[in-house]
Amino acid sequence: MDGKGLTLLTPENADHEIALAPSGQYFIDAYSTPEVPTVTVVRDLNGKSVVRLETADITGLRAIGWKPPMPITVKARDGKTDLYGLMYVPTNLDRAKKYPIVNHIYPGPQTGSVGGRSFSPARGDAQALAELGFIVVEIDGMGTPWRSKSFHDAYFGRMGDNTLPDQVAGMKELARRYPWIDLNRAGIYGHSGGGFAAADAMFRYPDFFKVGISEAGNHDQREYEDDWGERYQGLLARTQDSSDNYAPEANQLLAKNLKGKLLLAHGTMDDNVPPYNTLLVVNELIKANKDFDLILLPNRTHGFGNEPYMIRRRWDYFVKNLLGAEPPKEFQIGERRAR
Image 1 (tube, rainbow, N blue to C red):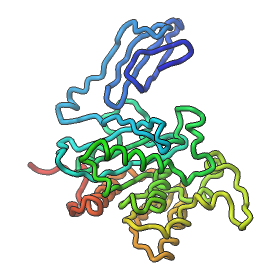
Image 2 (cartoon, helix red, strand yellow):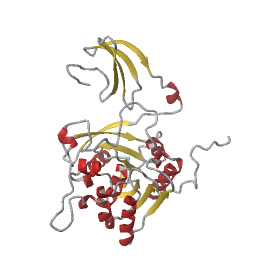
Image 3 (cartoon, helix red, strand yellow):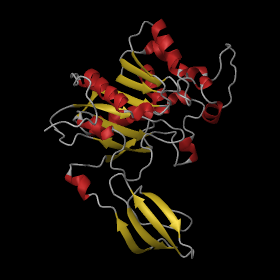
Image 4 (cartoon, rainbow, N blue to C red):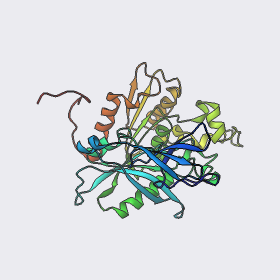
């Protein structure tokens, strides 16, 4: 990590938490990566480690079979820019088999698919999904933060981009690199902005993505918070055809392109993204005579994505429609079973 004349010699892309000592002569640095558990050291003002205080012990995790995600680097849509992400594979990966690939997306622009890069025993249910027989990827595409200003502004004013050209390019590169990835069985899922992107992917790349799950998506920025749309799409401006510059980014206007299997989900009391964002898409899918699946979760607000029921329905949807298997009926996540 480089700062103002300060270099910290730690693992590449490590996430740091720093606290300055009262004397101002030393600071405590706790750093980690998705693969490396937290190390806490005292450093001087030149960044040199003075004493190691603590290293997180993950012996217990490893004893029960825990494994870290694989860091990946792929090229962006331009074939030049490096993109960084994580890949999750089944613990007992059979390299002679072919596995469907599932993209867990969050397109930004205020964060990316990976999110924080500090160590965590479980990063959502990505590894759990991989254990069912999938390759799961998270790729921070162009338009996500913490890099250059030009990188962050890559799709300013074109919210429907959703980093999708980068996601597709990255997935294709991974399939060339790893022959056990079956690119003909590609899926995608996401929540909130990721829900917007997942449905968008099914409409803009209907021949590439075969199965999608869109949760709590803000599908039309004209129907969402003005501070979100205006920050990343710009001010709304009317066009000569009586439309506006937000219309090309609205998912419901692309819904007629759907070819694959799409599951839409929304909480009926969502106080972040109002549920009519998803109903706009539903209405256009009906008009276009498209088959789709819908879950409305009564009295749920925005953060239902980690509820056991939603997780199970997500797993079931990919297992049935992408893996071609029949999931166990109404499997209870967390249920204690007699031995």
